[in-house]
Image (cartoon, rainbow, N blue to C red; front, side, top):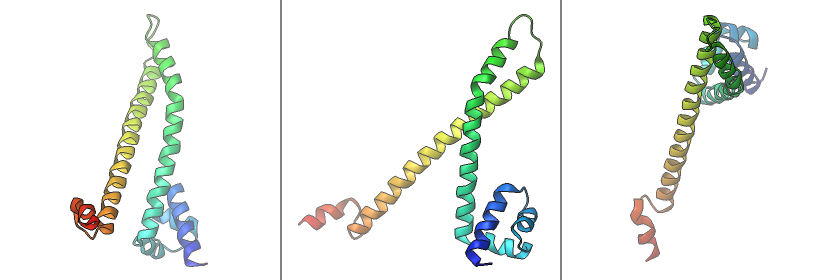
Length: 140
């Protein structure tokens, strides 16, 4: 098995299995190979991106369930309630959705900050590391 195929298979298995040992077995590699792969930056980055994609899909499902959760809360807040189990379940979905929305907001804000930082670094590199004075210096 080629090293790239092995790494890709292991990343996919890590996204589907709860432990490194189970992921290694599913990917058809030894545990020592799994731990060696986890030391590689490209594997760690691919795993992080895969986890973000899984989280985005989960967030989409949570958002879709939000309306049903609200309906359940509304239905069970009337005088004929005590459907405590339903209310608690609905509250859990709502809390999860709100936390997920906050995390998505933070993720977007972080991505913008990282892009700004990357642009700033590129600008500094383009202007000889002179910071804000580089453009003025190079125009002369």
